[in-house]
Amino acid sequence: MYKSIVVGTDGSSTADKAVAAAAEMARLTGAKLHVVTGFKSGTSGMGAASGAALVDGGLEASLRQEAAHEIGQRALSTWAQGLEAQHHAVAGDAADAVVNTAEAVGADLVIVGSKGMRGARRVLGSVPNSVSHTAPCAVLIVKTDG
Image (cartoon, rainbow, N blue to C red; front, side, top):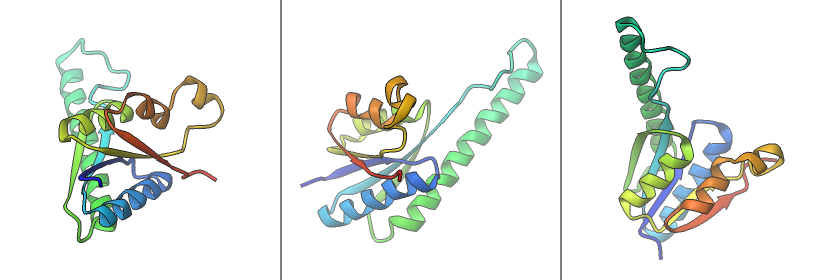
């Protein structure tokens, strides 16, 4: 049924529920699991007016990428045992990271958690809302809040 499943994680307990569901779906269908962690590659409030700011910005981006990699590796070691699985640490916001990875790997299913689907975030935008409207394939939204 599914050959390639993409799921995003930020390491939170709600994202863990989505990763667990994605791993189970991959087991049931024999699909390859792609776990995606987005990270910001720019600096947070630092200008690039000096060489020091550029070096600090590069260090900050490197640390964010390393943290994203660690989050993904934890998810793989926790839920992807026995599966063909890969982690992707992708620069950019979470929704774009998930959608871009789904396009790149030819995913036929994206799984996201429901966190952010209620209240102001639902109206202003959330990862599950953005992914569900822009993914190149089917999207399963797993109830992860409440």
